[in-house]
Structures are given as C-alpha cells and as structure tokens.
Amino acid sequence: MLQDKPELYKGLTYPWGRENYPAPDQPEQIAEGVYWVRFPMPMSLDHINLWLLEDGDGWTVVDTCLSLDSARQTWEQLFGSVMRDKPVTRVICTHMHPDHVGLAGWLTGRFGAELWMSREEFLMCRAMAADTGRSAPEVALRFYRAAGYDEEQIGLYKGKFGNFGKAISPLPESFRRLVDLETITIGDRYWQVVVGSGHSPEHVSLYCPALKLLISGDQVLPRITPNVSVFPTEPKGDPLHEWLSSSARIREILPDDVLVLPAHEAPFYGLHVRLSQLIEAHNRDLRSLFDHLHQPRRVVDCFPPLFSREIDADSIGLATGETMAHLNCLLGRRRITRRRDESGVDWYLQKPETAGFDDEPHPASRAPRVS
Ligand SMILES: [Zn+2]
Ligand SMILES: [Zn+2]
Image (cartoon, rainbow, N blue to C red; front, side, top):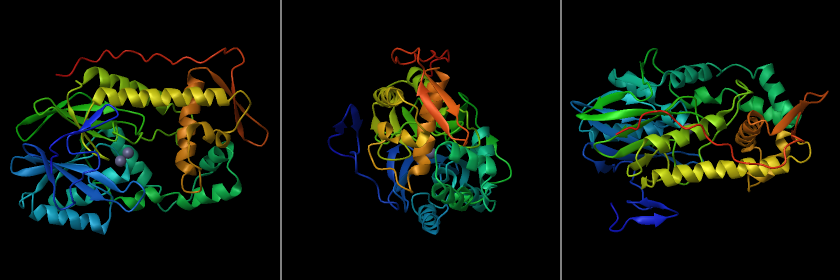
C-alpha cells in the first residue's frame, strides 16, 4: 500500500498518502513487528488508528477503539489473521478517551493481559465511568449557566451526562503505571514514554529510537487540532497552558526525523513543523479572543472568533470547553478579567491597562534530550 512517492502537504510528508488507509482487516506493516490497523467508528471522527506490536510470544496493542460489537468483531478477525492466534499480553492506552480505552477492559479480560496506562488517565477514566447512571450534579449546572447557557441548553447537557461510561467496557481493577520518560521493552525494542497534558491529564506517547517511530495518540495529529477543554470538574484549570508547554517540550526533547503514528488520520513526517503549527494556531486564537473582549462578553458570546462553523446543539459542549480553555489561559496570563453578575453569569473583559497582546513565552524545558 506504500505509495511510490510520498505525498507532501503543508510542510508534512505522508509516506502512505494523506487519505490512503488500510482496510480494518488488512493491517499495514509499518516496520518490523509494527502494524497499523484502522478501525471505523460511527461518528464524525469516523476512525481510529490502533497499533499492534509483536512482543515475543504475544502482542502488545496500543489503544483499543470504542466498546462496539463491530469493533469486537474486527478484533476477532485480527486475532485469527495477522496476529496468528498469539495472545494479547499487554494493552497500552495512550489516554482515557473512549475511542482509545473503550475495549481495554474486554481485551485484558479475554486474554488475562495487563493494562498499562499513566496513573491520572486510569483514575480519571474510572471516576468518569462512575458518573454513568447518576444525574448531572448541581455544580455542573451552575458552571454551564455561568457560561451563558439557557435552560434548553442545560437540558441537553443533563441528557448527555454519564454517556462516557456507556462507550467503554469497564476497566480492570488494577493496572501497570506508565511514567514520563521511563523506558519499556516491547519485543526486543526499547520504547520511551513521553507524557503530555492538556488534551487529557497525563497522555502517553511512545517513542522508539531504534525504529524512529513515535506513537503519538491524540497528542500530535496531522490535520485535526486536538481538543483542549475545561470541564465542570475543574472549572479553573488551565489545560491550554499545559498543552502549549507539553507541545513545546515534545518539540524540544524528540528528534524531528521520526515517523509519527497518530491515532487519527495518516502517519507522517514533520513532527516539529506540526507542533509549531498547532502552537501558533492556539496563539492566534488567543489573540483573536483577546481582541473580541474589548467589551464584556459571556463564554457563549466568544464562539465567533474561535470557530468558523455554526455552533449547534451537537457541538456546543465541545465549543464551550475549548472556549473556556482559551479564556482561562488569558486569565492565567492576566490579560483579562472575569466578573460574575447577580444572576450567576460570568462576563469576561480585556484588562484596561493592557495595551496590546503578545504571545507568552513558554518556559524552556529542562528535560534531557531523548536519544
Ligand atoms: Zn483523545
Ligand atoms: Zn482520539
């Protein structure tokens, strides 16, 4: 399937092409012992890439897809074909989102395999799954009313509350913790754990120096900008600051000549260019949002400078979380103020003494260079 000529697009090089994907039952070999599988998903983000790594007498799999019957069937086909009936001995999840962790419980249970994840992702996933069956807490309703939601929009939020746990099979009771910069052995290769934060709390990417591969999860995607959101559980969090710092750090500690294996879209070369593009896009958004706040506005008034598309009932949740991430980042940089009115709604405004907007320099990482 490898193209004769790699496709070049916006500074990135796609050896397999930008839109040339393997069929779910036809994994593509990326390197010795490394296979790319693409599972379809019934939503706007319509697929996820999973990675099968040969690991002695078994397989390590990275990410698992949503808990869907169709995905279980695809796994069953893979067990008997490319995986040659060797068992899954280890399941690694890059992070806690359902498309990544959805079948981790099923896979580990079926094979008696271990689950390897970072601690925050494991614990957060179990906490969120425990919301299923509960009704939305009052503090969350106050959070969305403060953002400017009307009662119809609050009703939509209540209806969706607890959906997270429905998209995953329950995680096992125990796990093996992955720690930033530790080296693990898969097959006869070393892979280094690189943790990032902002898209999710303690996201794991895996870097193999010998194969020059980076399994990047959702931390670095070639075309989509990874979602960075504030949620009611941590209303004053600044995930965008964490995301910008993580991206700058990854650009600093990892070499540029790795083949990036992202969880969505196609493998590519151009890690540093892509990280710079993502950082610049967020900084542009921060600047436009700051300009938009020359008069007091609520969260729901701040969608136009950040999103070119119309925000409807389906997208308002993500749009609100992303907008709040940008607002909290500007608050953290002391560029704007937030004032709550008598009805509990928050209003954001440029600080009067601020003459203009400059990008915040990112603290240089002191982490050692990975080689
Ligand atoms: Zn994700
Ligand atoms: Zn994802």
